[in-house]
Amino acid sequence: MSVAAIGFVVASYRGGSTYAPLYETFVIVPLIAVMTAACVLIGIYLRRRQRRPKPVADQWQALAVMGELCPHGWQAQITLYGWGAPVPDDAPPSRVPLVELEWKQFDEEPGRVAVVRRVWAPTIDAALQSMVDDRRTDIVLEQIERDADADEDVWWSD
Image (cartoon, rainbow, N blue to C red; front, side, top):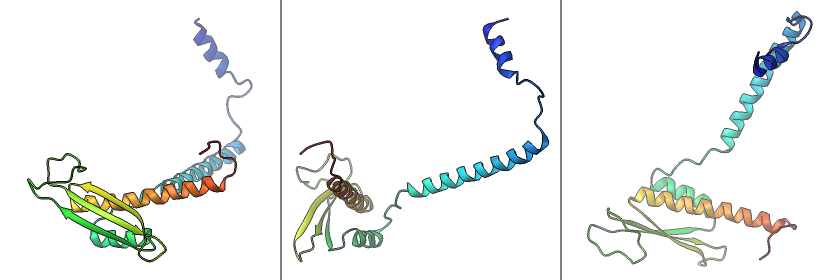
């Protein structure tokens, strides 16, 4: 006999009876059902927790979302470039006409600009989505900075 066959025979030997008593079956089967239900509930919870926000579908939805993300106000300007139109030097190379969206986020003080950003996209909808994504990224980074400032045993130094 090979070593694997001997190992299989030794591992499969339980000793005594090879059947479990009936009362153990009535305990194990419901326990498996409860554990399966718990796994499903944990999976649903984790999936909902990590769900990405829905993309912006139009300018009205972008207006609503940015209103929530920028509580002190914001302003955007869209510039459409046609075929053959001169584009700024910082524009990305593109085979289609570009859309430039420059947006500003205002600070708590009236009229004070906190952030100015420019995004480039092939369509207006894509530019609006990029603007919303930029702001959501800023919020996540701000939260990380606040958490790092609150934590006193930060291992890196400025």
